[in-house]
Length: 151
Picture (cartoon, rainbow, N blue to C red):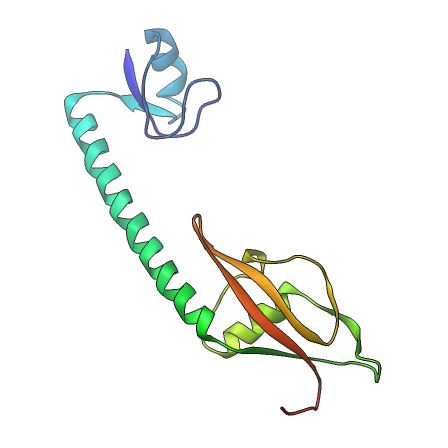
């Protein structure tokens, strides 16, 4: 019997795939558990339209991520942090700090999407990567300044 998987099933396939399984496995396990539906002409057509809609949504998300990446590249980010006279910070600048600075400039990004090569513990210029989409990654330059110093 051919079924359309609704959820990822180990050793069988991923959601949205059409797979052939034994009748008993489909009728007694996959279908009652909501993991699959029978592959009829109607459900196959519905699956195709669903895949097309998902592809369109993904393309829209990718386009908006690219637009956002272009906006972020144009920004000059300055992170304020408490520092001693030698230029060493009291603490570190984290991805959350960068996300906060981006939010202040009108771009809201989850801190978990921002990665830095090493912890920032001194004043200066640094770079971080922001993963906006699966294939859209933008490098963000930011400058760490001592609090209370206006440039």
